[in-house]
Image 1 (cartoon, one colour):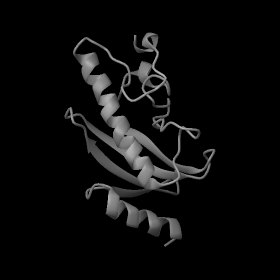
Image 2: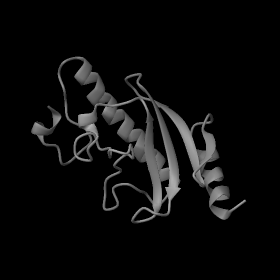
Image 3: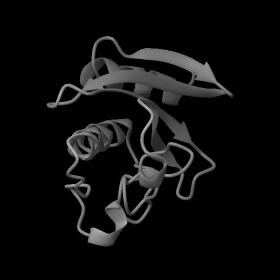
Length: 139
């Protein structure tokens, strides 16, 4: 067992939901959890360490539900085309710790759930937790 796996396992047991699952995908340890938002929209998110990102760190990737293609933009839905959640800051795609990537991805899920719900209600809104909102981007 490598050092990162042991440390990650300890953090998952301490901070992530009890039902979090581990998978090894393409040689990476991937931690998959469900996040049920305040609006009742369920998200499945994967967190993994990616040494190839710049800087290397923990990515959070949306597995489900599918979101609007127009929202797959780091300035609109704060998610990249490949499903990696934009975590903000200088690194955008990564965080130094699994715990930080988890907490930021949970906050993201709450924000995108608001966008989804308002869109379904016919009154689209911007991502609520952003300091770079542009009203023209939500159309």
